[in-house]
Length: 207
Image (cartoon, rainbow, N blue to C red; front, side, top):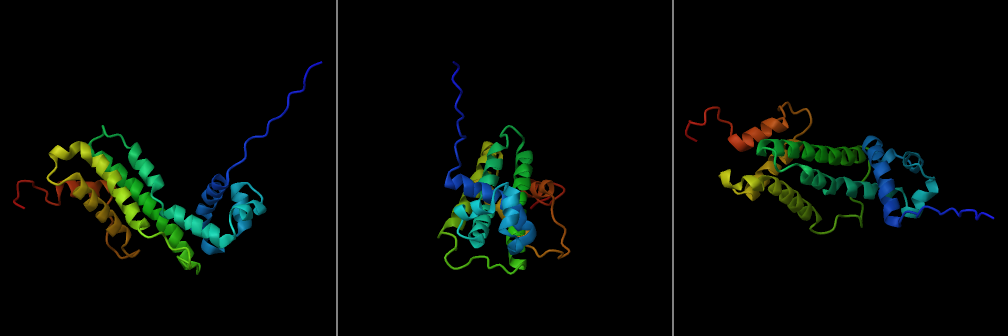
């Protein structure tokens, strides 16, 4: 007699994994619809039942807060910065870093902006970021860019740490400009070129 093989159930998700999966499905919808998004739409996007959302989150407001936290988290862009090959020329490395940073900032702008436009409070009481979290994120981003610049330290007039701060400052300044203000936006290549070589066409002209 042949034994019938027993079926093993696939291991279920942990509560943290389930929350992360729901947030990943909800984030693009929040960026498009803001607070008007419904939990049924989120459930369809995640391929789960609506009740599963409420086993992971108290209510929709908690889902929205988790989406904001995920958008603000530097984790994704730090992974992209770490994946840039250090063998590439410095200008190429920084142009790729600028592209990654711009995508990160655009995602933040889309999520926060759409929520704000739909009447959602950005930081409801009790959901403010932990003290020092913004500073910690900025420090992590600065460290990530510094690592990209470090191999060229000997050829630079400024320390990689200072150059990293200037680089991030230029990017953040461009993203904070009002939309449609008429000022042309630098491409990543132009931004890096100005950062590394300045605005003078003739390097022989005294600065």
